[in-house]
Length: 298
Image 1 (tube, rainbow, N blue to C red):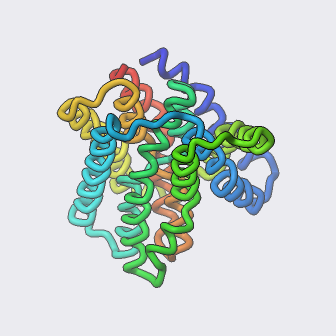
Image 2: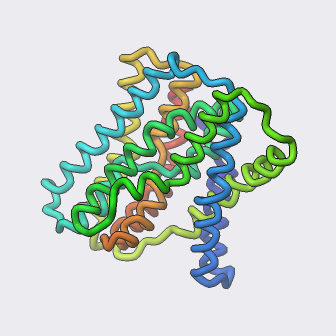
Image 3: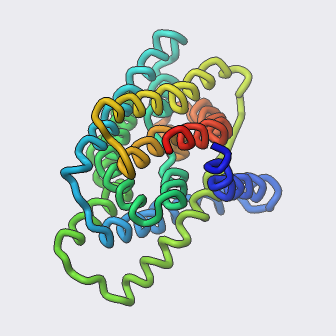
């Protein structure tokens, strides 16, 4: 577990760097908004497309891994639904915070799997993302859309993670070579995606209103970082998922919740402050739980 923690230490240091730059660097808030958009819409799609398009993919052996992904996502959903009964939440707070029980921080996940397993790990992880990202985004948008006028299908069809993964699958299946100049440009964007993504995660950390919402924050943090990976572990053992497929599933399950959950909640008129507090708590607790799960899963 200590060796895993040391492997992940540079990634968490970049998160702290982002927090320090936002707090003391003198950059205006709009700067970080533009960085987040650049990473989300350009650099991470380039990383996913390159990994998926360059790596031979075997879908049949990965089927049980995908079942594990769907299983622990639905488990997170059920735990999230229970929060409404336990805490008697307002409709907006419930619709906003339930997504933190099953969404995951893709930036941290790709950095972790790249460090642990290289491009083959990223490609396997991207295969898992291709199934789980539409599922978790659809669920998150559906809960918030019930409180507003957003379109579920519009949100899904313009999601850059989904589009880049599907495009990579399609290009991979054609068997065509990537033009050298384009491959180099995409490679440069992909190389910059991970450090900039982690810095933007740190810049987005907030802890406003932590004391007032601490029981709810603790509950969703325990669900995302303890209960969901435990379900993933159990399902993997039951279905016989091993090796790189198990590693990819466990990384995805054990990740802190998505920083974009705050953006979605704010854009759709939800309770952004509570979501931001849950995200921040997730990041700090994940510095302990993520090495723990990955250390046990070796």
